[in-house]
Length: 488
Image (cartoon, rainbow, N blue to C red; front, side, top):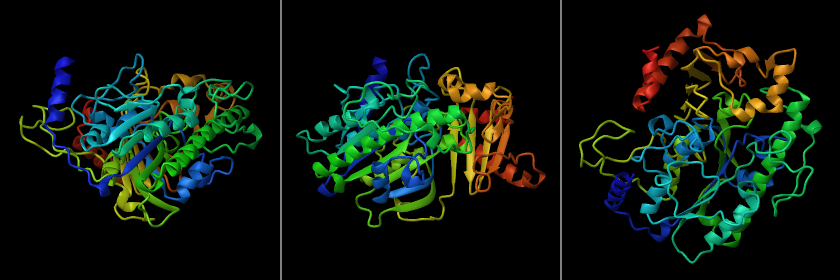
């Protein structure tokens, strides 16, 4: 470990950080909610109470085709913070506890690029990355927050103190709530319907099960409605954090020099969404408020994914990723001669050019890569989306699909198992747990993926084309699971 740290310090010391001009002193707030879907008024949800996010959308751009690349908290955050698919960095699943996945030491994350360019960086709330010497922040401002990362108002107050420090460097704030992830209460959400508010500073906003509109990918049952009511309460707490951050940026004079990004690591914590690369687990809210943007309240159908976040932030900050002296071999690329400098490359690209374009050309396809959630949940999936079509490659299709421990225990799933009609959303429980090698969907006509076209004679040409495209992507990004096209 000492040898690795020494090598990393040598690499960092060889970089020449550019001097920031006044024009380049741009700040960034990256707000990552935990398991948040489209339960937002700005996305048309009539039940949600989300004035903060609605304002963010009204003053920025709302993406409708934004995708996480892996529907698992820790692995997804590694992609967000590196601009690389996690199959190329070794961060295959959860970092915490016995799961123990982590990123290669050779990877340079967003914070180190910003640090080298003269930025101060801060993490508040859920961290969920590993190792800490790779995902380094200058400050961790989590002290004294009653309720921890489920109290986004108190988190924001800590952010205010950090922003106001006597430091004229531009800042990057990584602000991550644990809401609306399951965590306690009747349905395993961190609700407080029948007890004193454990999150001082937040307002208690309750939702009634009978008011819930159940999405088509979930069963329309009382158990689901009760869990959704708790879930919406947790989503509202997230929104209160957005509102408070808005106030702080206004009060400190930083609203007009700060890029504000809101999104989630993966979809809602219900079977059929989180841990799946079906649409509810992967297609997520993504709202960007660029203070330099002239047109406001826009919607774009540009297809982006989480590998695009780091390149976009660096683009906004006018920071060019530095060249680095490569190791003799690297885990994220082909072997390179020792001592020869090569550009630091990302798998994603900046989405800033499409913020004001409703239907931009060349932004209609993407890829996804999921391997683990918990370490006991081995089920590698690779996905390509091209236009209206989506191909899922279930690499371990011989295995039954594994449920996350919290999703399996949920009233939603347990009630489905006990019902006479063994259905779950658009699928039977059997089909949900026993998946074919390939699933092909027209997500424009079939957005909840109820009709697998991979066996349809009329779609064999499309199937073959997307298979070839997906395999080429795996080769290009050095995906270890690419060999499964030829082996087993």
